[in-house]
Image (cartoon, rainbow, N blue to C red; front, side, top):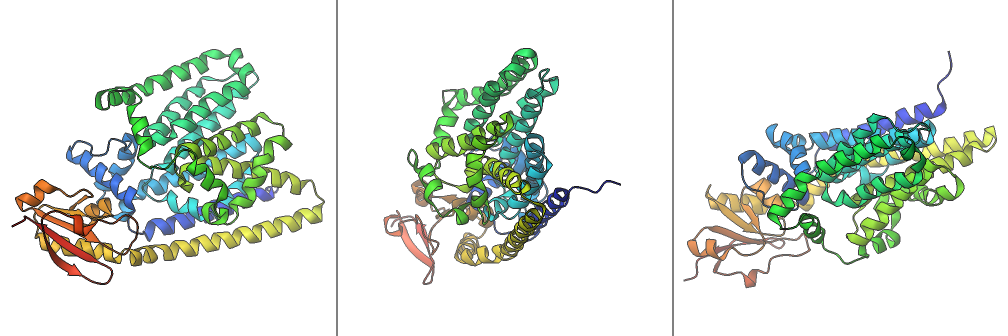
Length: 455
């Protein structure tokens, strides 16, 4: 019986580490963040037949959030689908890396990413970044498989269209990396395209047809087929190139994970060392994603998960090639050192996952206190709360979150509250609030004012 290659066990260990940490995060959940609560509220509106409140929220995320609302709306329920898509994401990484660079590259890539806290934390949160990146990874897997064939692509290339369409509908911000994924393979494998063009043409047509519903929606609601995309770009704020500057100058270990930066650097030089089309494909998409998103949006690690992951795959493969070119004793020593650091990173992120929920709830103690006080004071009547944490206040407390003072509601005598807490950032200016002010709760770190009709 032939012994399994060493990297088989590295892959199994990496997958187990990833699954264990994400399972901890799912079963011991932290409170929903702002964006998570917004997606949950939007999904609840869908089920209640209410018109969308946020035009820039993608319908794909509504679809991913709806099952959690149907299952009861608990933190575990709304994060069930993200937990599962996170598993699909890591399997997509392994599959793409295996197809493009071999099983060893897949194994080491998964093992490294299983110790990347900024990535793992987001894989179980109700956010669009990981599910969208998973769809793009799967599409790249199919593209690399089919277009690299000497005799041309098969009709299974058609699966690329729904995968890229899903990536777009889950996260509108994926339009740029999706465009890169569509264009780059045509230049790298143009001979394969010309040998058998019909599957490529059919895939392009199918993808275009799948984008028609979005174009019609944008035309109807905004007045332009690109209107939603252009306005969505303004939601995160930031200036041109601000994100890229941060990606290049921030503390990389805090921003990307403990071992990820050490592997991304070799990944940046991979196509200059390994002259393979598959390497160039991953590199162009990865670097294009980081540069493009960095120019267009403010910096968030989750905005460039696709790019950073691809550079990790390329870097892991290049380091593996370097190690395997050494003598047997050196290879064993390098592998032992690598596995020691990897195991350490897995333990660290698992420990952080255990402590993160309690730490987060401690930081939000005044936010939950404000929800409790306003809900009790409203006595079951419709209410609004002007506060920094608008979506979380509405999801957990029941009062509609607002930022601008609802003057008409105050004049009618509705239950309207303004809250300042100790979480920093933009807080409501209580002195500028309209109406008569009545303080219903005050402490050193929290003040709640009820806004009543003026005398």
